[in-house]
Amino acid sequence: MLLLFSLVAVYTERKVAAFVQDRIGPMEVGYQGLLQTVADLLKLLQKEAIVPAAADKVLFVWAPVWMLTTVLAAFAVLPVTNAWAGAGTAAGVLYLLTFTSLKTLGIVVAGWASNNKYARLGSMRAATQMVAYEIPLGLSILCVIVVCQTLDLQIISAQQGPGLWAWNVFRVPPLLLVYPIFFIAALAACQRAPFDLAESESELIGGYHTEYGGIRWAWIMLTEYSMVLLMSLLGAILFWGSWNTPFFDVGPCPLGTWTSGAAGTLAGHLWAGFWLLSKALITVAIKMWIRWTFPRIQFDQLMCLCWQYLTPAVLTLLLLVLGWCAWRLP
Image (cartoon, rainbow, N blue to C red; front, side, top):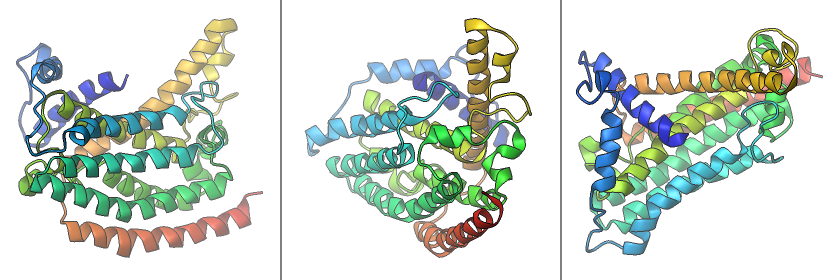
């Protein structure tokens, strides 16, 4: 599923970039260029996987595998519907944050093992960036945990339905101000423009993956797009009602109440999955639009944004959320 999503996302992003820059984008391979990303994948699969002579060969080869594995493992705890909860765990939020942080370790190892000054600079940027963005990211998620009183993502999802006004951002209005902070920190966690300082092709050629090519470079790109989807799904689960429909109906999966038997259950699951995925894909589209609209910020500006603005703001909002919960919620 993630491979299919990445193929579609790369094509979509090229078209979005072309639209923003008044171009037409890929057009030659397949109808309207639909098969261009498939052709690129086949090309990458056929390329020789070159390891630089001065690189640490073992770490160089395994760093992309580590990055991809940690992001894939983080998907395990995401609930898809009210019954399909994935690997349900009472500490799902901590599990997910842990594995997304471990991805940065793979970036650091990839940059160091390449024995390339640009790759090493990119990896050091990624490590420093992680220390900065994880504070507002964790505090914004803590605001939701204070409201829901649980770390279980499935329970957080179940508390937000049925109906639009049961979603966290509407149930607790201060969370409407928390979500932009979460969104910005998640954008930095995904290493996406304007926070793609670990790659920064105008300064560091390709950053931490400068020396990578072929299938290993494809793994790194798959990791990047999987991370974008993961953080978009997490935002939808924590703030925007997860798999719950915005319509007021009986239960979180209204189609399941219209029919009976296995068909009704399947219809309910598909309906719930549709709402969760659609919310996440809207966020993915916004991130693509931002990438091709805003210029890359400087590294010191990112540090200033995270430490001097986002962190004090989210701490203030955390106090507001605590006050709201003490006043309004039972």
